Length: 430
Picture (tube, rainbow, N blue to C red):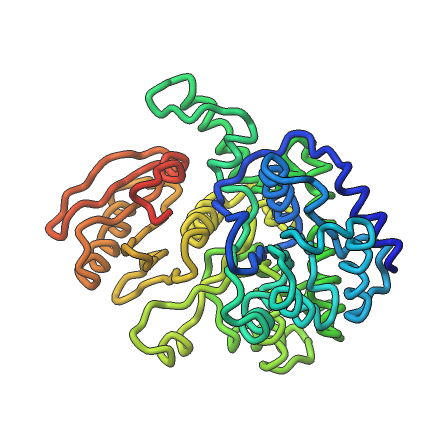
């Protein structure tokens, strides 16, 4: 194993990355903490590491950088004990580095049981800056919280945002230029349906679907079935389909349980709850609670379902219509969720799609089309009720085309096209 580590370290140090599209994350290369990047598979965590390594290469000797991808088949079957051979092999290659700071990048490290013990020991004993990535929020919740407590800073990485997508496509973001706006709107129509996984961007529709299906299979089998020894795989697959078809809608475990029971599935409520939590841990699914002042009340109410990426929906869509209203709401959720995990829906007599609490508070309703004044009245009425409750003087109604500012007793409701809202930084929680 030591010789394999030596080969992987040397090969990587000779590697040229080519062009790396910059992402909108500010991740430090120098900090007293372990830097953890987590997120769904294939969302770009590895390229984020490459971007950091590229920055470092401009300042330090390439031989001071160690990068290992633990999904490399040459490392299988690797155990916790084998990890000791990583630095042994490195110092045999570069004995002088024992007296210098080294930068260690451990990609998809969750594949090794007990990895956190090794990382903690290296952090405590070596002169090293550590970076780890993983495809399960377990890295955030239980493993990092218990084993790396106080030693780590964590960044959630998502598939490309719309702004990052425009950068990738080299589209200039100039809202005063009619030409630029035409390109932006055209790009948004594609992004809305195809999603933000970079490997799909330049592919045909058929190849895109195949790539996304492979991603989903990888998430299901690697991060869920293998990890949790899932017996009822057909139910898990059905649950995934349900989730992508119904994103933006309310769901309760009781209702799901009754639905599945009536279809003949032998399933307990606890198992169903477990499957939903596994999907969340793998960053495939998000469930958003109602905003209430007590956790108990939040738990009693149904939650709203959202998905990590719009592209997955087309793997399951039965109808010819692309169901733009759900796609719109999912994009709005992801946009807010990138900035905070404090995302809720709100309801008194009427429902507001999204409420977010960061250093500021935001209320957002999403209406793909406002066909008539009745729809407009319903959407603005719900926002007005929310504004009164939270004592806010501004809220947003996101649409496909309509743009205006509506003054009401509580303040103003900004009606704004989705593509434009996604590019406004100062006002929407990003």
